[in-house]
Image (tube, rainbow, N blue to C red; front, side):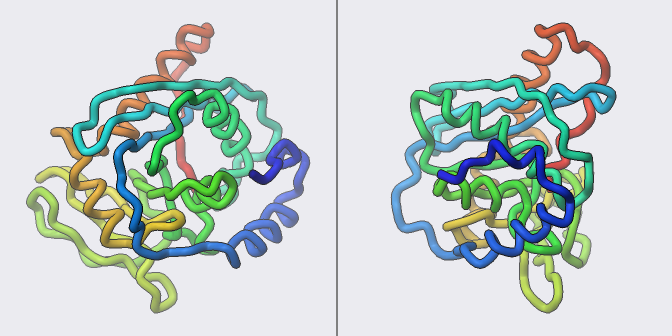
Length: 235
């Protein structure tokens, strides 16, 4: 596993250079091993603080019964820059990952996979660092053009960037904005969409990241940071 402890000391230019190097290792391909466990990851922070809270919730799959959780709290110094947020958030997520007793077969992160201008969203970055297959499920679009999906559950529309399909805009619920699904590493676009569809349980966002979101907000409040959270924009 890559040592991510130095991420906070990188300049933005160095971070971009590192993304370009890691990008060469991305593998978007069919995942041929069974998925028996799946996890969701999210972060929470107050934009006026340098403390970041990370959480991972592990489920059985496809039943989605919770079988484990892990959290971590980190101090961050890397600036908040769109497209480089992984350098703020990956170290805390790795701490949470290392605290997990049961490592999942697949991770879903609240953010982008390859639907990123350098194909290096948080899901892709995390997958490359850990070696675990990953999916990005984002609440907002970062890169990729698409036609608006029909207003019905599970309507979808491919997302393209520079002539390459990078993901799918998925209407998880009627009368809700779509979510943006992109493979992170070691899984295909179609598998990513199929897995996320199976993880929708009546809410706009999939159950793994929804439960991770609840977990990180809970630990943030327990540690006395009750101010409104900055959304986790895993870019």
